[in-house]
Image (cartoon, rainbow, N blue to C red):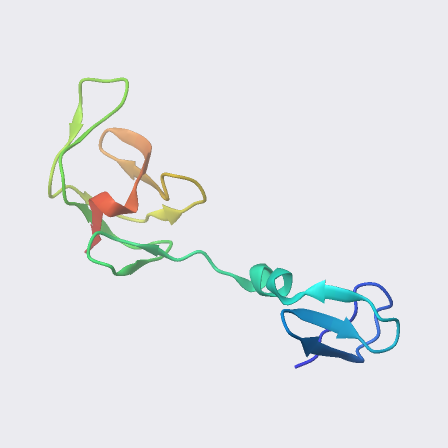
Length: 109
């Protein structure tokens, strides 16, 4: 599998160790950068199941809602989650409002 050279844009390239090398202009660039572009974030629930946008989940632990005296109870079902970047991977709407949750406190329904 050959990638076009980012410097001269020709496709006469080959892998050499952890780099790609352009045979025409001699430019080298790391393979890792090419792999990172195609990486897809994988978020797993408390049981190791992969979560995706639109999934329904169930809360596996009582969670205190920061800034309020409310608690999100065990067994609360949440529909239509969204996977986002950051420490709290799941964006969702609950009876207590919109919030961000960590996937380790959820299981796929």
